[in-house]
Image (cartoon, rainbow, N blue to C red):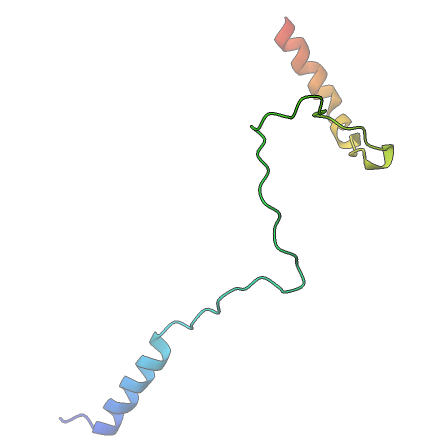
Length: 83
């Protein structure tokens, strides 16, 4: 039995169209964001007289309240490590 040429062409076309993965778009950063600042060199020595730490106002303090949620576990771990 011979296979019709139209079915062969249709099946090849369908396999080519369905078999190819879609081309992924190239990601580009949005134009509204400024360029990244150069990385800081934390191993560089400070100039003479420069301070490594600076004082910040209380409104910039991090929220430490989550650290006290598991205080009982911390106290138990300290007791086990001491005893």
